[in-house]
Length: 197
Image 1 (cartoon, rainbow, N blue to C red):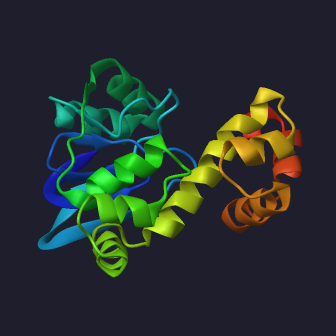
Image 2: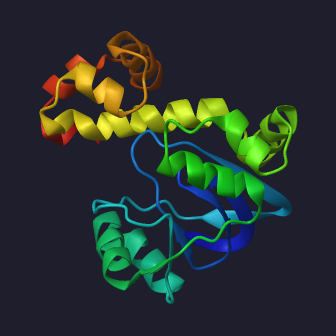
């Protein structure tokens, strides 16, 4: 939750400009780039236990959450859950539209997307990296891994999850998953549910 200042955050759920009272939601293993102005920003990190259905929310009484956090972080988390209003995130420009297209289609052909939008592949790569701090290829790979992580509880075979999430095979899934989490998908699946988030 932003207490003071403002910044632009670009991550796995898109790019957003945030200001005091805004709440940015992050799931386990999600990444983001913060572009903070010279004036800085103060944030309060509050644990979120619910499902994340939006990247952005708004709290009207920031001070109440801060007071609750000073006494009990669980109470602050409960207060955020009760009082947050979820907001839609609108794309700022073409890197955001590309990120949205990737989130919608993990098999998206980046060269075809660039051509359809009048961009050269080099421009796409540089512009996306400037906005998101990573290449579109790496962004897509990370989202595939996060989607596979979410699918591990489905009971599907690892080979089926790999195909469904756009990996070339199960070994490709395992390499990407291990790079992100430090463990294999099979080992992750065997964890008790309380340890997976």
